Image (cartoon, rainbow, N blue to C red; front, side):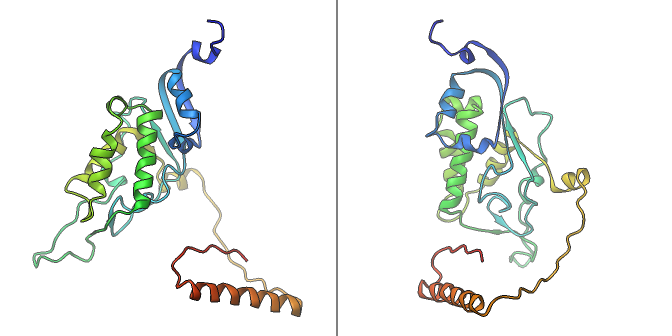
Length: 230
């Protein structure tokens, strides 16, 4: 056993990583080394498992579900801990007798390349780190059976969102906002306006900076995302 890491000689009960969304990046040494470990159960703890899917209603528009305050992904026997379907995506749309969507009907939208990036991240975490047997045995299943049906140019195919829902129910536990608010009572938010007594030259510099930002936005025809903090 000489030269073999002692970590590889242990049978681990559970492997838990905080900020576990980093496991979506397969270019790091984390996932390959985790695969070498003999681990019975693997957990990912993260408040940001995805960037764009969170709060999007998973492909539907309408009343959006509250974003999770934290998420845990695991293959640790969750058959008794699954979330109800409505906690992850809105209920299916209903059509009025006239054949037009009702005012509360979620509208189908076209999923974008940003959604694809998030789906790929989820797929990497589920397939390679958590190593759900079905997906670990065939690493293309997430792409062929989950991602591609959602990213059809005409919109998600029939049943595609339900498939994603079922996959997420298999591996994810979420803390709902209302549960967190019951456990941690925060004081009410208060806003107060504070006027700054700026030097005349500082005022001119600030106005010039704002003007430059406005000119840049108009000149670029607002085709790019700009983040500025003053």
